[in-house]
Length: 361
Image 1 (cartoon, rainbow, N blue to C red):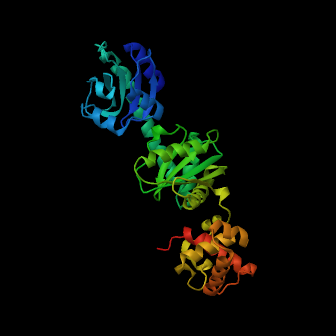
Image 2 (cartoon, one colour; image 1 turned 90 degrees about the horizontal axis):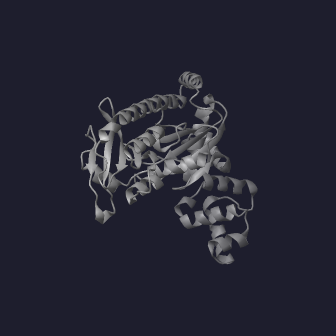
């Protein structure tokens, strides 16, 4: 009997003599097998982008495939370039976990029911994997708990199961789309959970983190929300995941929408990890009303970012030097700080760097 999903799809393609594609119930690609050169835009889209479009999903679901217990024929649509196909529901214990698609434009397949035992086997495997993912997701959430004993227990159980191989990379994706990521779209050894509104990914050694983060980002961006991502690498043991998560979420806070920031690239922004926002806001607060003048704030930040170079700052702001000198005098007046004093410059630079990333609620 087939032991993995790719083998099941290949067996089905050979058994029924047609190209086969296995997708989960959200129409994400799980496996596919060629049989001849037959293809249409829908199959190509699924293979290239690892999922079908929402339009295709809506169109096919109108044929009742989500409730079907046996093969469903989907007719061709010449206007869309869509070939006729058969849909075999992949179910286990009366739950639909996915669909096995077979291109059959000429309706040569008359005994598709022969492949239903393969679909049942695929349903069992998909149900088992879903359960394993759920169980491991709970363990990952426990690794992020604020309670040391809960973290220690989760680390011990995950170590015993050998589900993760340190050193680990911890990634955080921040977005307004809190629904969990579809695990079928991520490598099987990558574990994910949602914790304190963070999408948290644990990526074991041997897997490059950036492509995994990019794939997860695309899944979240499909929901219409921008995504900020942070990464911390080198968590040498499971009991270090909690700290890795805290650092990765700081990196995500510092990232722009659509960007991934690494903890090692943050520089002074790592101070965001050292204290609560209100304490940091109080520590870096500067006197005066500079915050009421966004143009002067930008000037001060640019000047300090360019190490006090008038020439480079004027060029970056596209202003005349005399205009810049005037602005710098106004900054000193508003803050009671001297830009000729190293400590004052450090105080102002820290405030301007950290404050935009602090939660002032």
